[in-house]
Length: 258
Image (cartoon, rainbow, N blue to C red; front, side, top):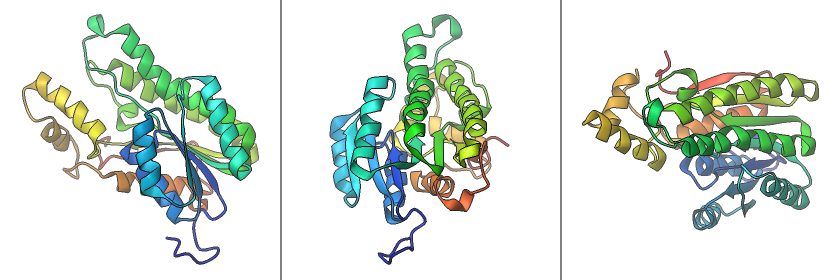
């Protein structure tokens, strides 16, 4: 960790954008980025939560409300980051939503579209507008999920979107390799946060049991992860520690995908 000495942090002199920045994972990653010397533009669609997150972080952080599904909003976010700090080195594309769980014949089409828009169109638009302003040797990290490696009944929007992000990542990894820009996806398993708790509440009503215990039974390490554990993986991919890692689907799931 950067202790304030010059040149000590893994991300000294780097500029990062973190979407979904008001959520637990975005916040944990931004905190690590700052501790390692980065300047961070924190973005989220929920203004009060975003303002609180930025206030909690302090340091070399700015915050901007942005809708990753809208190109004009993404353009403004990227332009504001470059205007403030000159260029971009790291994109952590982390905005997400879950949707619902329902049989295919009753799965709401508008929910499917909304989930796909945030995860897939959002990662696409962020990459589209960041890449021209990213310094060579940069890093793009997209938050997929253990759901991007499996299928589960009724989770049509979320699981489809998480698989699609891998395809986007692989295209970008090959396209941007000549510029030494690395592109990878992370695949968290169940994390102890409000997002997962909401999923488990809905699941519990379907299985008539404890949703958290259900997930723990599927994880070899027999527990949920923490946002901080996943954030350390994001830091690895953002930093030069992963200088020969691109096109990877990095599991952070306690063995759930094994």
